[in-house]
Length: 284
Length: 281
Image (cartoon, rainbow over all chains, first blue to last red; front, side):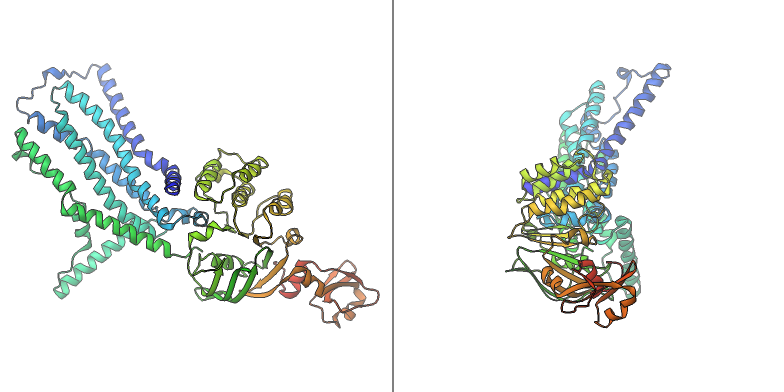
């Protein structure tokens, strides 16, 4: 455990800039909005009286809070996915590119442990970043909904947590594939890996068409693996009881479904294959 | 007891044969020099010993058969590669803490002593250090480990002459005892010659010679005569003949004697040039 901590600490020290980047982007985004609001307010163009907003035709406070919880994580999820991709696509090749592979390999520590540390820092490191952004967004939304008198904290937190778990699963899958690419390719691992998957996809398509086969298409399966059903047809969920049921259904899909199990198993398998490839490579 | 045993080691890079049927037995408690031209196979040999490369043949390291890289060997073996492979993205302090955390054989007192004697800036990133500073850091790390075998591939590359002398005369001496084995590959053979006990000449992937240095030097001598007597030297079939100012010197068998010739002991680089040839040693 001591060695794993040391590896993790080193990987986080190295990846600190990339991991913190989404936070700076979000902060910059908010600062720009604050400046724009301030300018509008000072120029007297902004005339918003929150008390005047009519919510009589709006959905129930429960659905507003729940959807707000889901929604405040939608922009950060794109950032989380991009930065997970950036971190993990260099997971197993960056030491080779930085010429430090021999130094790390010359330490009495298992390659599996080194690989795990890179995997965890690349994926879970981004989860922590995303959590920090999510907490910031949550505070802002709580303040806004409170001032609009539209806050149901339990529903807001349920939506927020479900979005968080959904993001964790998406980045786990994306990160695991990129991690595999990093074991296979030294440079531009994501693009090269994607090109190969797309190539295989079209090859299978052609084979299926020409030979009448029904082979599974790689891209379709990967997209299926990334899917979550968190946003269902919200129109049919109106009352508090119905929304509670919706939240329950979403938790089942997110955590207790076959898809979740497959997502975790595939990620684990990709990690094992990546490390095995990495371990068996010569260090020249 | 041999700490490293190599039998019929052959290594190809594509079609290029980097090591050709190398067999070596390296005993414990020796300081061994590995001398060869660029591309002779020195680094490949060291990396094969550590299992970093795939090869044909057998290698045994501290009694363990090496088929592929096993991290457990680094509990007893430290290695400095010929390229500067430290982690550029960490600071000096972070690097020291990292290595310390991973190595049970880390000697804190030794590390502090070496650090105090160096001018390494702890909070500076490794990438901002000069080449010499990086080498110093690598040496500090390696010599702070209590290991049985030290493999040094061009360890003083980039260092100034003062530190090189300090390293070979003092630092390495403090590390070494009869339980340890040091294998040094270097181009600066003159600087390291006095501490070496055994020498290995390697050329085009083959081991040309592996011998105790004292015994090797006892087999030969250098005879120097005026240039006009060059033919007399050639008659004794010297392994090397080279002109000097107004004179000519030759390395010949110790049994040869020539009236009026100045006799001296050959240096390692002379012997290397004589046995391997070329000017790139």
